[in-house]
Image (cartoon, rainbow, N blue to C red; front, side):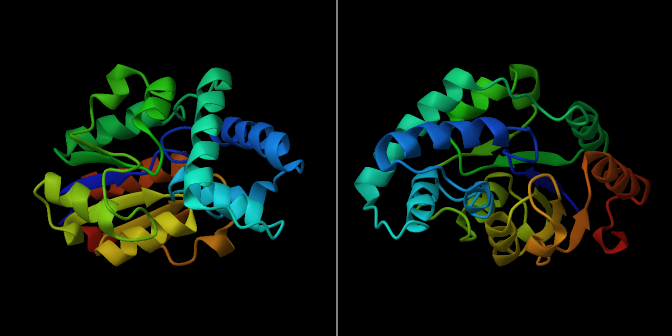
Length: 224
């Protein structure tokens, strides 16, 4: 039985990638004088931002130590918050309402910072989550299971009774390693990058229908 739904943030709750990409372009070009490839960011989404920084420059055979990578990530996040006009996907309020109608616990599990989340989500949406796990809340971030295990523990729910909604390979890997059922959305990557999820859906409208099925069938995850 499903008792909780755990949502990723970027690409799941909110359409943020264009602004993250622009912010990465600015800082990477300033320090390394090349334009990052969007795919190198998308494929590493979900991991802490400093690890994304390391992955970006590694495409140019540059080895960036953790301290430098964290500094770069902090600058990128400042730019993101300055330029972002991102908001939640339009279906999110109704999806959260659906979850509440089934008395499901709600968690937000992300590799980004609470400051970035507050820049994008209104209090009305954010206040619906009983737990928020952000960057640095666990010793290890995605793709390790720690963030989802910690969210489940805080919600007093077995990970096996948690449904996770993700959009990137590292997040899917974390969810499955934690023992959760995982739905992947094709918001930033094509299906072939998401094939370790239990279910792959095209968009939030499809997710809405899937959650409606869960509600109609009293939360029986076997019916997904």
